[in-house]
Image (cartoon, rainbow, N blue to C red):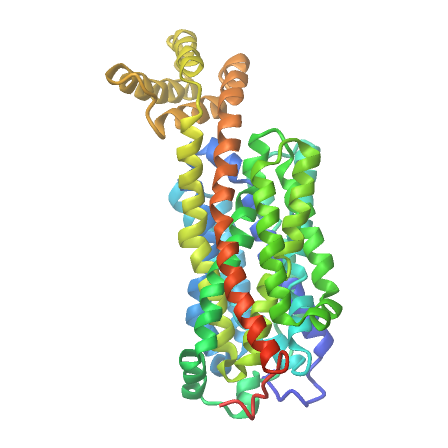
Length: 489
């Protein structure tokens, strides 16, 4: 089949929208499952928080690469072609991670999956805009229901596997294949409409001009870097950070994303009540308060309460940002939407997620109890000195690195100390040693992770200024106004 015009009866709008939603579920299941296995990866492969942050980050900035490369080509290659590339990427990336042997292959697999995720958005955002040209912000919110919705499905599936005793992280990664095969069946052979830009006769040059010479576009790109960091940075770390503190972090992530899905589905009434810029302004305020509370919350009840406020705050950020660009700068077309996704994911993947990991490492190390840790390592040396199995030898090697450094200077080395504790936990060489190592490292990782959440909060203050300015300007000029792609120039 070939792509055809939007008015052609052969274009099945409802099937294409459903298939797009399932494709987005594949991206969010990938987000949830990679997040759910981060603690397991740290222990199985003896990775630092920063290294795990790079794996989690690759699952984000790889998205940005494919958005940057392929979003401008949605007009020429066609949206169906991009989705076919995405299908292959989801299959290949999942396989690479499942059979990974260390940091490099984990990183590569996460990167390929993320590039497939970016291809889904590069194709589906302009597809939804083309299918519903008169209701873009609302339909983009309803389409993006299925990012948090997929996180809920993937998170519950991962938790269910743990509950029944299936703890292999590879099986959790394999969950990505289920929605991948489903969206491949639904839409990869369907006829697609042209993008709005093609339908309106907007050239590639005009699209680039609208995207790069419009001041509002630059404002939205800067804001997108921050809104994505506030939403996705903490969400990336929630399972590992809270699990380290003894709370079922994956269930908190499921709760956050379940609320986001419900609220996005009902976005129509909210958008019409507050206007897109008013909604963004309120989101910045509530999101900042929720993240601040999550940084300090102790215990299950207070953690879920803080997570609720956070979810209400960030749920409308991503789709509403895309909707504003599509409605206010329509001639930027697929390029404008792709640039927004690129900047958002690249910022989180290259800066926010790794830096949150670095901050977590730094603050976690600072609260490790020196005396208890040294005493634990002394006992471990005595118990493991005569052992010849690989796990015992690996633990001994990691402990000796710390011991030599401690003899030189009476301080624990970073990140070697945390790595030695993780090696001991992963080795499972002695139940009492493992339990004590967990009791030392868990609270430290939890504390460091929560401090990293706190470092993101000031971005909400900057967003209040940006969105406050846009909202005020709209009120001064008679309210929020949608630009026509034919009239805009």
